[in-house]
Image 1 (cartoon, each protein chain N blue to C red):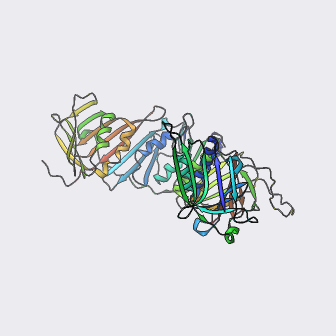
Image 2: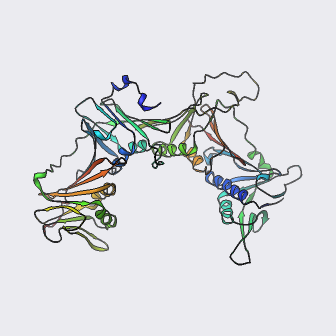
Image 3: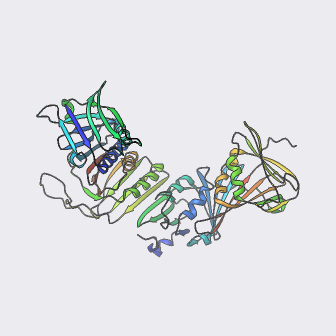
Amino acid sequence: MPLSTQSQGDDEQYVLVANLDNARNLSNILKAITFKDHAIFTATTNGLKVTVEDSKCLQANAFIQAEIFQEFTIREDLVAFQINLTVLLDCLNIFGGTTTPGVSTALRMCYKGYGYPLTLFLEEGGVVTVCKINTQEPEEPIDFEFCSTNVTNKVILQSESLKEAFSELDMTSEVLQITMSPSQPYFRLSTFGNAGNAHYDYSKDSDMMELFKCTETQTNRYKMSLLKPSTKALALSCKVSVRTDNRGFLSLQYLVRNDDGQICFVEYYCCPDEEVEEN
Amino acid sequence: MKFRGKIIDIACLNHFTRVVTTISKLTKMCVLRLTPDNLFFVLSGKVANGGVSMWCELSQANFFDEYQMEGVSSEDNEICLEVTPENLSRALKTVQNAKAVKVKLTKKHCPCLTIAAELPTLSSVSRVVTHDVPVDVIPRRLWHEFKEPSMPDFDVSIYLPPLKTMKNIVDRMKNLSNFLVIEANLNGEMNLKIETDLVSVTTHFRDLGNPPWGDDASQDGGPSQSRDPESMVEARVDIRRLQQFLVGQQVNPSKAMCNIVHQSVLHLILLHEDMSLQYFIPAVA
C-alpha cells in the first residue's frame, strides 16, 4: 500500500509523524553517531535531534531539521524517547544498504507517545515493510555547558584535510592531544603510541583553514577511544569546526550534506582527559 | 562401477560449474547420484544439518557430450558417491577455458572423481591439468536414504519475489532475530515476519502469483478443501537456513516458488533451464 494513502484518521493518534522520500537522508546521518546501542530521540517543531552518549564524557548529536522531511508533524512541544539505534538502522536499511541509483526507500515514521513503539513504514519498489521498535524512557542528555562566550579557540577546516590525519591516527595512543594557539604550531594533533610520537600540524594560512580564531595557547588531551567514533562523522562531512572552551572541553561540529544536497549537522562534545600534567 | 564423461561446450562447462558452486554454498557435503540419464546432488535431512534436505536434478545430456556409466550392477545401474562439492567446484573453476574437460571415476589412493583438462598456453604445447577429488562410495544398502523426495501435501504454493530482494531483507532480519515466519496465501500475498522483545518487522509482498497446480496437492484425489484465498499459512524457520539458501543463488532462475505446509515445512523450488533445485527447510515451534 503506498505510504501516501495512509488514512488521515490514523494520523490523529500519532504525536509525531515524519515522512522522507529517501530514508538514506536519515540513516546516513545516524551512522555518524552509532557507537552505542542506545540513542535519545528528541523532536520539536524544529526537527529531530538524536543523542548518543558514552561514559558521561562524550556526547554526539545529529540534527535533522524539519525542512529535510517531506512532512514533519508534531502535536506536542517536545516528544522524547530512547531507542535501540542499531535496530533502528537495520530497519531503515531493510531493503539493503546500497541501492541502485534512482531507486530509494521511502520512509514514514510514526510515534503515538509514551510507552508506544516507534513505527516505521518503509517502501521500495512496491514492497512495504512495517517495523515496530520498542522505546524506553528517555534519559536526560548531559548538558556539557558549552557556550560560545567561554570559547577560547576556534578553527573551521575543510574536512578533506582532517580525514587523512584521522585515518592515519596511531590507535595505540591512549589519547589524542589537540594544541591550539595564536602562534606556532597554530593547530596540532598529536599522538603518543607504540610507534612513537606523531604530530599533524595545520597552519593558520593553509588553504584548508576557513576560519582561525585562537586567543590563547591551549593543549588538551582526550581519550582516543572516545573520539574514534567521530571519524564516521568526519567522513560524511565537508567542513568541521573545532572549538575548545576555558575548561578544555572540546566541541566538534560537522557540516554534512545529504543525498539531496541539504545541510545537516552533527556535533561531538568531549571532556578533557583528567590525567594531564600541565606543561 | 565405471563412469566417464566429457564436456566440450564452453557454455555447458560454465553452467555445470555454476550448478556445482551453488550446491557448494548450500552444503559442505552431499551425495552425487549418477544414473544413465541424470546427475543428482542430494542432501538428506539429518539433525546435523538442521533437518534441511536438498534435491538437485540435472539431465546429463544438457551438459555432457559424452557420458558413459556402469552402475553397481545391471539391476542397480547407478553410482552413489559422497562428495564435498566445494572441492569439485574449485577444480572446475580452474579449467574454465579448456577445450574439453573429462570427468572420470578413478581409484587413486582412494576413490576419486578425476577432473582432467587440456588448457591452452601461449606456446604450442598444451598444459594438462588433473584434479583428483576424493569421494566416498555409498553402499547399496544406504541408497534408500537418497531417494527423490515426494511432493509434500502443501497448503499453499506461491511464486517467490525476486531472490535478490528477498536476500537483502533476510540478511537484515538475521541481525534482529534467529527465527523468521514466512506466510503466504492463495491470493499471491506473502509476508516475511520477525518478532522479538525489541522489535517486530513484517515485509509484505503482493501480486506474486500462485502456480497453477491447484490449491490442494493431495495425491489421493480426496475432496479438495477449498481454501479461503485470503487465509495465510505459515512456517517458522531458522533464519540462517533461509539465508544460506538465498546466498547460494548466483543466477536468476526461470521459475522460483515455494510450497508451505502449515507449521511443518517450507519447500523451495527453483527451476532453471538445465536444472531443478528443491530445498526443504523444516518449521520450528
